[in-house]
Image (tube, rainbow, N blue to C red; front, side, top):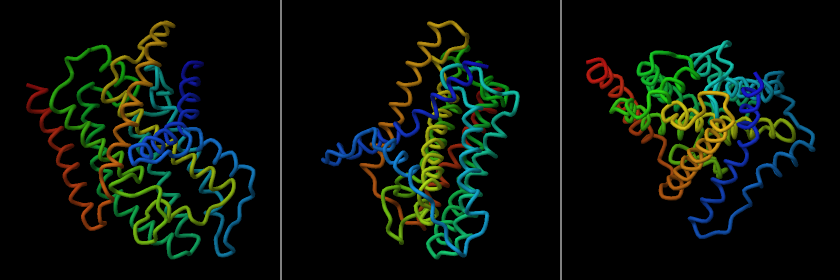
Amino acid sequence: MIIELIQTFLLLALAPLVTGIIRSLKARMQGRKGPSVLQPYRDLLKLLYKSSIRSRDSSWVLSIAPYVCMAAVIAAALLVPVIYTGTFGLIGDLLLLIYLLAIVRFFTTLAALDAGSTFGGMGSSRELFISSIVEPTMLLSIFTVGLISSTTDLGGISMNMASTGLDLIEPSLLLAAAAFFIAILAENSRVPVDNPATHLELTMVHEAMVLEYSGKDLALMEYASMTKLLVFFTLMANIFFPWGIATSMDPIALAIGLLAYLVKISILTLAIAVVESSMAKMRLFRLPNLFTMAFILSLLAVIAYYILGVA
């Protein structure tokens, strides 16, 4: 119980740092000095000291959405193995995790519509359009790993994959990982799907949905978004490539698990920074081409499992 809580707190504590590192790396790659990697912590702290201002046209939905989103993300973090394969798996598995992440999207889009602003409605429609195509890709990708490890428990998947060694590296796993990486970009509104640093009305998606928030409410929404990104990174690192994660409570194994986790998260952070620095945001009507490619990769992963894995 204690180690599960520690690794959950570790994930929650590192979430703003990962966002700060991505911003700093992007700035360096673009020839700028950029902000400090600790700037997201300062921004969140500053917002927490400010009061929230809400539209008079909004209802209770706008008020509770930040708390619901933050609670759903924390619950999702409890289910994800970080440095140790043990999680709070008794309360759910990857199906619950997917629904928890869907709750974040649902309340974010619902609150954006509740404010009655044009930008909120535009961002909500774009977000739902993107998620309707990306969610099947994410489901197929994770189910592929579940098929390979013969379980839907996230801790069990990590345990089985890490204990088996490199024998489970097969085409289905690599195809599912590639599809899931594209899903990470879409689910977290990253380039080329969206640009989290812009506020241009013709291009923004996620930022359009949180324009009505300020103060503590905005801090919760931003923190939930940062934590959601790290949850996806952790899924990629410890579900698709869990080698190095601790499978026992041995202190040395836990130390190796922490080191392996930090290395894998650093690689994913660098990959996101490289993608966002080398690519431009795609036009909205071209996004289905990217998502269709990701869906085909995840579908091929399932087919490859049944053709190669079962034989």
